[in-house]
Figure 1 (cartoon, one colour):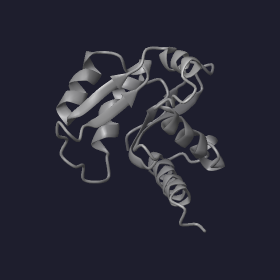
Figure 2 (cartoon, rainbow, N blue to C red; figure 1 turned 60 degrees about the vertical axis):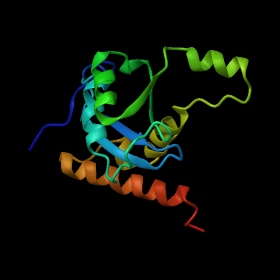
Figure 3 (cartoon, helix red, strand yellow; figure 1 turned 180 degrees about the horizontal axis):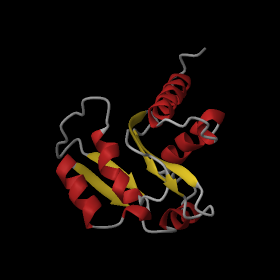
Length: 158
């Protein structure tokens, strides 16, 4: 069993988990990866993309597949990864979206969809406060919660 928790550098080295999710423009989760909270975001980029659960359409010049990331993903490793998987990479420097939001009132930040999904995940107490010891159980809880979030967001709940 692979260990998927580690010391959190911002919380007095308590053990924690970092989630990385890939969502489409509507917030439906396509890929998920977890690791110890001490891991850098860049190290979770490949497993997240490799864990995409649906068959991706082939990207073309007319129908590009965009990958919008925050400033934590700056670097050659992510550029090579995006090229390998056929994504058009968009990495915003820190504070750039905030400046655009002030200038243009109709501008909508692209990363808010991911942040919203993370916020919805935190509403599931068993995920926010990780009671489960086994990585497999925690991953199953994440998949269940993401399934419920997708079900709610599609309007099928009534």
